[in-house]
Length: 587
Image (cartoon, rainbow, N blue to C red; front, side, top):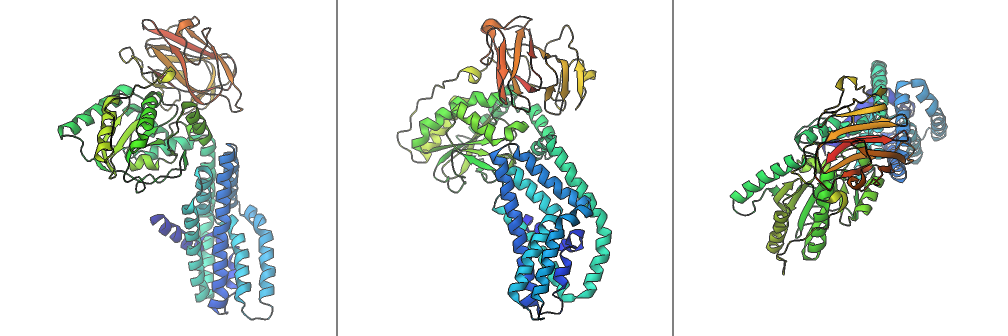
């Protein structure tokens, strides 16, 4: 509601913005004519047409993005054009010149015999709306950007209508009061020209930030209720708290579980928060908390390159299958950590590969994440048939306890013949449970914003191609680059063949989140452990001779040791340029 009010007020204030200039001649041509038969139809036609055109643009932009990831760039070009029209008045004038001429001809026809015609005035309003839409400035640009990059909705249309109604209101007042208001407006418009240009520059800066991937850092940070800030550093903070740190997450879950037991049974932790805000639902139409009343609900926050999330999935899938007919609804909420996890095509492919057939909400804007005040991947929330959260668990482990909670809530809901037995998860590959007794290496990010234990630390060059040389020896949990790399905030991208990453680690399993180059072509690599081919210690994505290729953006298991675990030196050499490396995880 508040957004609608703000959009309306933004429209009202448009009257002191330079973008109103092309509209004024048509509006004030109605001065002296009956307002109800002349001015009002014009303003109504203008507002409705503006909202319709802008909505079509938003829906079209969103459709383009869904069809092809390159549509994101088309959307950015579209918004950049808006920014340029704000920054360069002459460009805006050239773009709107044909519409001004068409509106002038319509106005001449309508006023030919000096009699007010509501229909003709409405048509002039339609032409004026077409004229106004390309130059309405920041509010339109922001709305279209959000709709194109995150999905258009009825909210987009309502906001556009509210904005148009606000502008029509101020123009109606000016039309009724006459020429004195017009003169005051013209004086204020001159002072507002620099504001217009500043907003245009800000829009172009926003486009540049999105194009460089900086927006993903901002979004995640904004999305976390506990940090309340701006995506990448948020994610960094989450990582520090436990985002992919199994030990920390299980400790947190254990403490909360203990307090629940102390209260005697399962307490009421609060109502199930809203599930509104997903940019898209997969495997299901949108679900609401109201529609889920009468069902026991498990909400699983996950993201597809998170190793901890992947290792909990066999249990979540088994619960969904076992208890579906007894009243359990499992809902996955996919909240991305890295930029590529915002791509719905990537998520859809990952779900198919992982065999996920229950409903999944794509929470790219972190609205559901914030509604739950969540801070962890993975996080499981269990709600009873009355829509109340009765239990939660963060991270891996405690699967037997979680399944007993499901059984208890189903019995409370009236389900009959709820089985007492516990599932045995079929976990293989990267989903196999970790050997935490042997994990002495922490999750390690490769991007400069969260990089730790990089050696030599002083040689890291942010956002520029630089040559690196790895040292001959590394201490435990130190890592280094070798060859030419461009290190960004969340990833490092190789700029030449034979570029390497070296890591001294202690764990049974080593994983690395990787993505191919911008052209999507596979990138070949060679893995060594202590300078030799891994042999029996190779991971599921590597051959015994250490060879493999990066063909999609996901987590790759590179090492799985079957014997004793000691400190080992891992290296991966990329035979082709363009690969992106994001984060190491261990198990």
